[in-house]
Length: 88
Image (cartoon, rainbow, N blue to C red; front, top):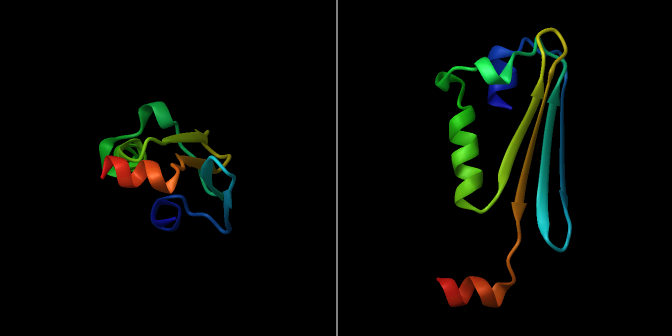
């Protein structure tokens, strides 16, 4: 949301957080200026988002094009409580 507020020039930001038995899903969409994710520089924080999700076994996907806004999806798998305890 910080990137959308600071860089996208978005008028609206939508956030949804859902959970299933196996994962938590976060989706952030904005109606801002968009960008080419393959050409994004490291200063945009995208690598940090991906790294944090990966540390939890999850993934980040980004859909965007210039002029069309951006959708960021984060999926983090859930582990059973006893698995977390066993692995510390």
